[in-house]
Image 1 (cartoon, one colour):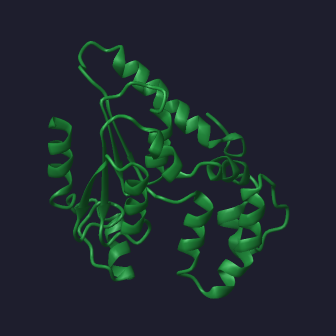
Image 2 (tube, rainbow, N blue to C red):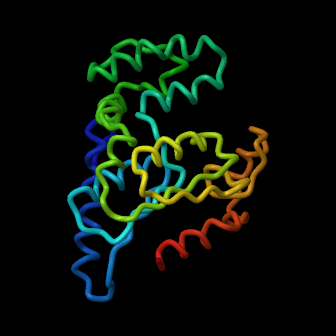
Length: 209
């Protein structure tokens, strides 16, 4: 068990590599296809760069580096939030820890999580996905409030051979949802809701190609 202060983005990357190696040694499986969701999309595309996997699927994967993702998300808050967060983000992007952070931003920038954020900010998904040579499917929902369709367009531009699957009315947790913020987030904690129609069908079709 790794303490939060000792956790790095590379730990997750290595976890994926280890699982791939384990599955590839298992005679029950003829091939390994990797799927990463959200932050896991970036982790997956980095992990497979020096491994031979059959295909890669990114679901709701960001197209921008972590610092820019956080900035975009904070823009939904009152302006002063991003104003106070900006100098912190800038320092973290430079690999520098920040000692004094506003109390209302402690959940995001607490001291124990800063080393992880620094390790995460080193990677730009649009750079990493360009390194993949295996077939790639990019999946994105149109009512996702955390990752936008523009993210998938950035990834597609970086890897022109990639296929895109845009699922109308699907949010970040892969459920059918309206664009209304409150109604959208209400789906996050409702396990009774099914996955959005078109998601699994599109993924299965890609895996069979």
